Image (cartoon, rainbow, N blue to C red; front, side, top):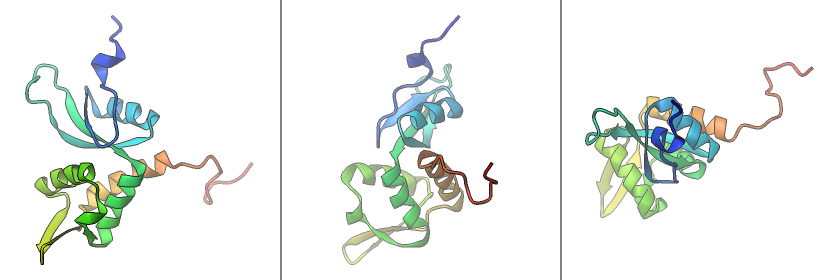
Length: 137
């Protein structure tokens, strides 16, 4: 029996949640659309299907998140849609939040999250030219 793609994975959209049956399927669907993925939660209302919920992240937003790994970024640098994703990361303690003097700052992205997003960004922006450590035939 062939399962239609709509039942395996919803269409990922930038800065929005989508469901997929598994991480690899979500990654493949999102990569075809130029998006990185970030786990959000398990679908609690459909426990027998065991689907997972992910964020679809465009490359420019992944770059903004990766800048939070080393530097402190002001909340004004993020749009309202981006802040929803960042606040979800704050709730999971994957990024730190500091409110001081009426301003909000985000900093210290979790190293595992930064490494995973960095790998996905590299795949999204991969250049077909040979890498330096590979021999050119």
